[in-house]
Image (cartoon, rainbow, N blue to C red; front, side, top):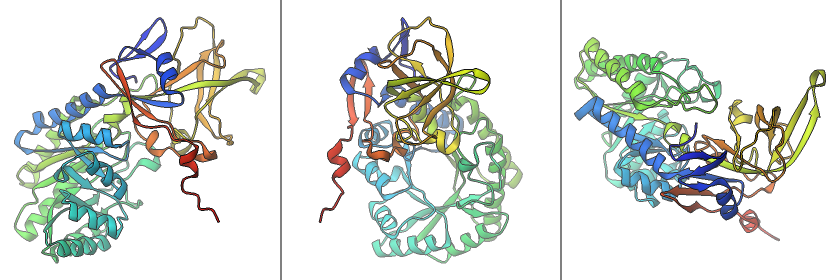
Amino acid sequence: MWSKNVSFDGGALHLSGISAAHLAKEFGTPAFFLDEDAYRSRALAWQHGLQAEFGAQAGTIYYAAKSFICTAVAQWIAEIGVGIDVCTGGELAAALAGGINPQKIELHGNNKSLSEIDRAVSAGVKTIVMDSLFEIERVAAAAKKHGVRQAVMLRLTPGIEAHTHEKISTAHEDVKFGFSIASGAAWTAVEAVAQHPELELRGVHCHIGSQIFGSEAHEIATDRLMAFMAKYRDVYGTELPELDLGGGFGIAYVAGDVTVEPADVLPQIHAAVKQACATHNLAMPLVSLEPGRNIVGPTMFTLYEVGTVKDVVIDGGKVRKYVSVDGGMSDNIRPSLYDAQYSAVIAQRKSSAPLQLSRLVGKHCETGDIIINDLQLPSDIAPGDLIATPATGAYGRSMASNYNHVPRPPVIAVNNGKARVIVRRENEADLLALDVKE
């Protein structure tokens, strides 16, 4: 659950040799701490793994901007040489500001605005992943306006029920994303693209969901997508050269979870693509993947300070200790949205006190402001203690809000024993900056 450069010395958490107590003193709490070396290592592991498996047919590893993006992280991505998938104009702006080559950018989204499409085409993004018939017309118009032939892919819905939370399962039929293969919508999209010489259909794409463990669902999706590619060849007489199988590979949040590593799934995916090529008499396409939270998720933790502790008598006279910290659903909404589970430890000291049933809660005016519903914490936990929650790199800061007019936390990159702010803490001036006075 912890990133590679986190260690515990005498019970105290350290990141790259810097203690949690020192980090809290210098940067305050709540705050996100990002292990830069771990981030770079994970991105490179996926890139090298894809290249090792697929050789010349290795496409691109796309980092998911939605999981977390800022200018500094975009700079790392540019230096590492992986790609990035963006879903909005804001994510595209961050990617470009960080110096990512537009030919390493893939634009997603089920409702891209006209301005977002126009900027993507004018910037020269490598691929726009189509999600509706309206979008096909809009991208074609933008390509004609800018005098380019825009590479596109079709996001297909292969009809797979991924074994994950329903709100992050994206490839069954009854969802807002993509073109259904089963209903014929996908083929209608192929025919629509073919009407526009300004568009170059490079291949097909799918994304079956997030927090996926194993490769079975991706293997099934591979066969269905390549059967579709074979139909395209039979009708148009040429093969589509690219296949993007998405990703969404899971990470460890609690004891018993195991983070998916490239070697855990890439050989099986490679074998599935080879088998599908043989079955459908297709050449091996360029294969790309989008590991999603798997790159950044395990490389960050959130550090809180305990403000109050309260014993509450619950069922049968048991006592639950409510531990309130200085953050909450404004910096980690996932437990409320997805019933996501997390772990937590006291970060600045070791305790030999007996463990007690506890609930880690935030400071917001919501009963549902719960970070961890049930966990065992030392019974001597007290105001002033530091609490660290691992694996908050994905969808923590990126989904953070100003609920209750709370400033959003900073992100601190730590590397080689040095820490620096890459996203500053918001302040009250930021909260009031958009207000318009009479």
